[in-house]
Length: 64
Image 1 (cartoon, rainbow, N blue to C red):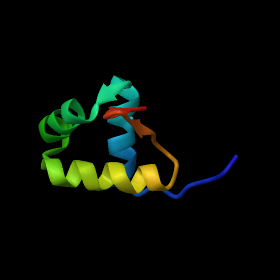
Image 2: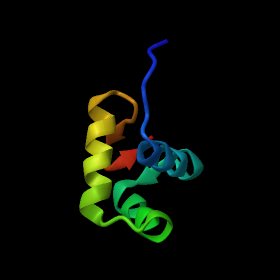
Image 3: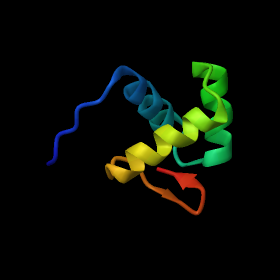
Image 4: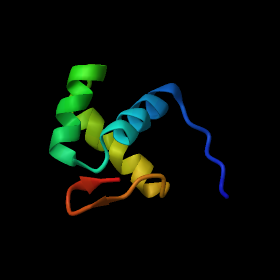
């Protein structure tokens, strides 16, 4: 199993996804705004970075 170093913001983001998954990426941006105060661009940047690390999957706008 591959190990990842997660920053606090990444962990909080993943915790929300684990709570709501599977979740539509648009709905995820709304949840992140409500719970973390993040703008849509911040959510999508974090989603892209964690997807590139193969920590998350974002297929057909559904995050798991």
